[in-house]
Image (cartoon, rainbow, N blue to C red; front, side, top):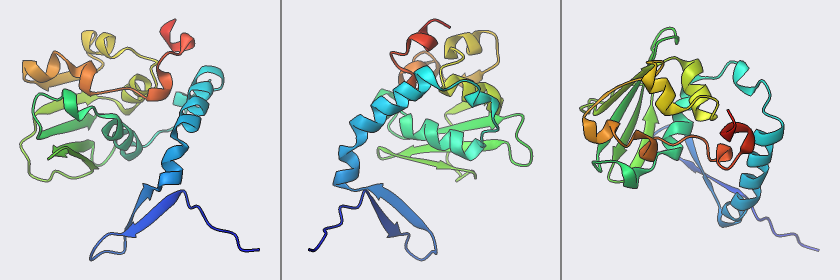
Length: 174
């Protein structure tokens, strides 16, 4: 009997490098509703101490970039600089939006920065996981945002928190 492989992930080599990009296959994308429900369950019942562990700046910026709502940005081409003051070495990370595509990176690609967000890795991680309200963090300056009013006014529309935290009574109560 022959078995047919229904791979969940497709790996593609990046041209002229030894690096790869990974994409979900159609069967992988079909698992999204199941994984979302499992993620929400995990955030509700087993996230105790999750943000107490060391998180990486690259991982956090990748997650923020992946959740960015491009349609809510005031400009289709936007560059965001996150200054994570407690990260040693290179505290700045970037999210660039060009032609509707979002890219996170560790280096400045030379684009004019539209939004500067200054905070700590810990505070931004806790915002991402819904432990700290973004508006409250901005109000008490744990998260400082330097941007034109059109970006700053609707930041919660375009800079999203983890989708696993939505509709979570434990987070809504905090």
